[in-house]
Image 1: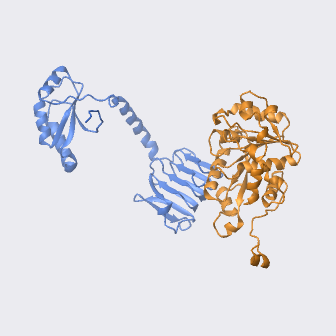
Image 2: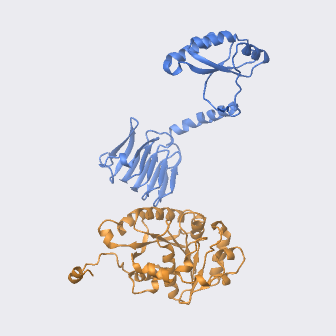
Image 3: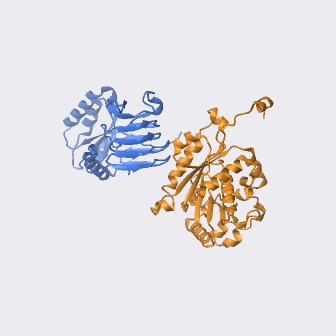
Length: 236
Length: 270
């Protein structure tokens, strides 16, 4: 038998006031949303404010009543609070160093929030990227925030990627990934479709999954109801 | 103007060294001063194929490290006047090849009046192969009629267009030629082997030559004689055609269709 440390992902509820009714309400709502998932779920209470005077015995009871199991309490606690917590036989948790960089995670969230509007519309002012000539095995052509036109064949083992649509005037033997940043309306147009992989907004299809009707034909590939759909180019 | 030609493939065992030896010899026989450099550091083979392994004193790495000068390291071929070999080191690691060192060697060779500098690349896409192709003006991509070889050739052709000096300096791109080796028209007809057309579809590189599968190649290698010197052999003739095409002389493709067996040979198994 060995004793060693390990990491777990736990639910954390932030407590910002002395009132415990809000906590009871919050836990109750969560439990109703997914009763099976939250039944006997371990939970950590994070106390935000060293000055808060909290009845920890009552808190423990409320959590138990809502069918959660209190693992411990975290936060910047005053020595007075710590004493009260210890008196209730509740563990005091210290956040690991990695988690303590909260301001950083907030900024990265902010950055994401800023990027999202740009991503949702990749057809902005960026000019379509045009690649002339064959794309060879091992090469990767990426059109950031725009469409990609390939004037030539795409060899097996090559990858053409665009945040927008992809047009291939030639044979696609490699991989084509359109809507790479999540644009579900992106399409792949190809003169001669023999791909290793087709992907739109992260949904993909391997060559084995393709219906033989479309292989080696001119095709349009689109995403409909989260499914890769192929159509003949000439019929559109 | 001196031309640096890399013989490369990506995949191993497809005939890079055999082709380097044959084409280098063929070019030298036209009277052009030619050197073949073995870039396969640690696994030197070119000197064996050329039959000069007993006369190797210094090697490419010695020259790069300044332990010998170029004249000391160059091995002169005994059969062909204008032909020289610059052998690889067998004891060093391929990291000993530096861009600056290779540049210095190629520059000195050009100053010495060499017209053709043939770089025999090792297999793979690591340092040795990258250094062999970096200063190339032209490339001979050697391919067997087989899918994995074709795939690797595609990869190395991509490297030529992105990782060479010419691409980095945005000069005219490296001129790429395709050399198909070990081609067997009979097996192509039985659909056991990729045809020239299949390979062309997959690679889209100008064809320099098609060397037929031949027993003569192995025996020539064992004798240390470049196969091109054996003009009775189909492979030797095919290499001669490739050398002529490299110099801009038009030659029809030979040995690419099945020979129709005559009545007698069919009976007696000709």
